[in-house]
Image (cartoon, rainbow, N blue to C red; front, side, top):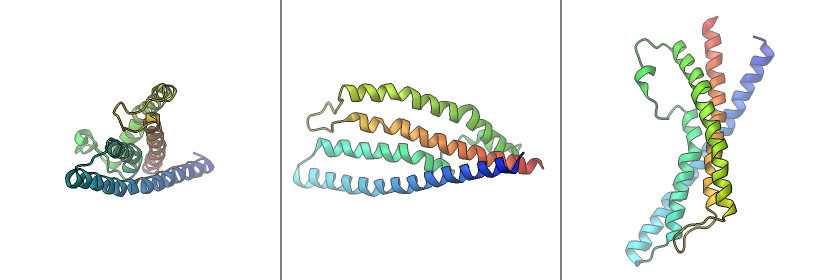
Length: 177
């Protein structure tokens, strides 16, 4: 394969992983904010018998953002949940794992990510059009904002999946020589 194409692919993978790394580190600060918010909420409820629906909803919104937007970062660092039945088999070597990773991204991760991205837009659009908010009194408005994290999350997963495919492609090429 042409060295210019390989060099371009490597730069693309480096760029995508750099973006995911920065986003993951930024999202990690939400964990601290969530801990502070939950501590405040618990203190107010149990010491002062004063609670807030908006704060409780903000807690699950933050948790959703951490989970959704942190998924690509977790995938990048290979800390995600994986069914290792096939992957850790004694018949699997690094070359075969690279093929499983490459084909898994190509046939499953990328199409599924695209499906979620495209199918979630009407869900967000309806929420925006109807100005959906919390059904609870004192809850948060603009529910479409939190719903927008779904396609954003799967876009990040898609980008990390492309970078992962490129890395595995390079490994396959290197082992094939």
